[in-house]
Length: 477
Image (cartoon, rainbow, N blue to C red; front, side):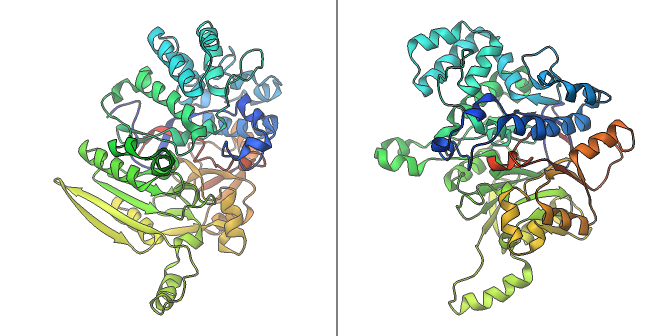
């Protein structure tokens, strides 16, 4: 097993991950471009950083790299410049466990050949002038990394569009055991972040043991012969929010607004060919902006605990009632999912169907994770109308597990927090938890069954939760 890169579950103890703090490009999102850049609204950058995302970073460091923050929080919080969070500053936390994407990018820019290739590739995608290409070639590695991400030159001139969605590092790639499945974004706004990620994964020393194990989704040759107006609607696209490494031999892939059936099929073929996993389940969800990826409708908290949107889970009794009326021709009142599981055994692939999402998640708990405790479902908005849909929109189902039973969610989802408490979890605000850590009243090692509530007024406008804002690269399971 690679000691640096290995993920075989969603709930194993998190040891290393890639994040990207909100950058100045987010502050350039304007109303006329918000939806093109996949935002529902414009955000207040300083509030998002200082009052919200910085808590996320501190929580992650406390669990993964305690010495970086233990006993230092007052000094860190008192620094108005936020130098602790900036890779370009000497005071930067510089963890090799909570890893900033910008730092990885600046590292590979130290390689002359990679630097030249990447500048040329970005300039080709963004149609930069030859003059600006030469100007970028003269920049320091740190400045160039920032420009490639934000599109903003040191003189504050915008050279090309920002890539504000890079805050959601989950979407750039997923570690599948000791392999890495790269994304192929559905929207043009994410093209550059995918390109930058590809250069990082193929060239950074952290990923050296993955060479030969990086899987890319491509277009088939027929695509290039289609008329231009048909090509866009026939792209093979796959994003990391639709991929979950749910058990050592089992991968979930969502087919959604952002991930196509053909890309999922291609991923299955490549994963089986490389023997990366033996089982892949496709979960086809309604192609709606409300849902976007499968991790917006469910995530796992413990081996036997899942948080999900009840209307898409199809509670078993309700499903049985509905089936009677479906047979009589009545339009079903729920939004249907299609779930197909592909099992590769000695080169022969068998297909299994699941009636609903809860059956699938129960099967994963019992059959894949060998956990025979009662399966618990915690529902978005406590399954109360209209809070289930309201809180799913603000990422009540999109939680990151830092160790089994300990997950980070948003503080605005009150009814979902109530549901967690009814299921036996405690909920605690991020600031209160950090204070207790500092006073040694609690510790990451002994904490159990807790949902950490992250401030989220601005973060939730970006339509992604803590699960989206993470790319785990090492979990201990």
